[in-house]
Length: 213
Image (tube, rainbow, N blue to C red; front, side, top):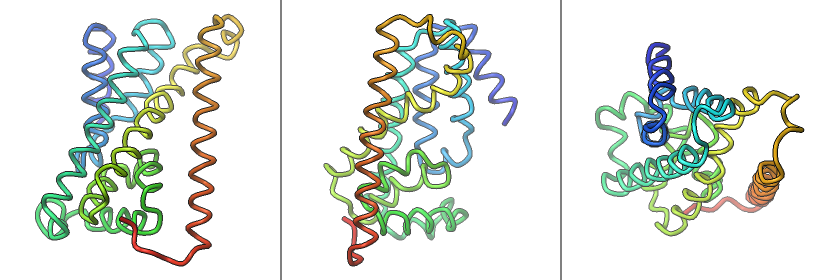
């Protein structure tokens, strides 16, 4: 795994024109069923955030690629679940990951729409919740709303730790007004979405259990 991380970062650093494509593929794999369980994509993306903060890689192509790749990965996982049905968990290779699928299924059963959104931010269920959503018959439009919104938020969130480390606390005052406004906007949007999700989860806990769809 460490060799993969080192080679990926080295390639992006030496071939900046390909950074968007590589990041998109990593985000796609990170969100794809089974592949996301095995791929250390998040670690690479955090390091890429550092390359963005250091000015080595342009931020916009990387951000857009991460959003698109993440949304596509979840979409394919969802349609695989919808197409193959619930019996897929008893077939190879998913039968080797029954615990992970069971955890995602319980998470989805409890929280439905919110599970698809929040699941992207939690490694243990990120690569399996979309598959389960398809298996459980979640409506396509509801899934895509949660999928796309979470991808838009997830991309800057996963890149931000490396970006902040590269910038350093002492460099924050040197940022221009546009950068500061962008960071503030991301923070506000993230807080609003987290608050809405927290409220939804709280209501679901107090309400009578119902089947998510």
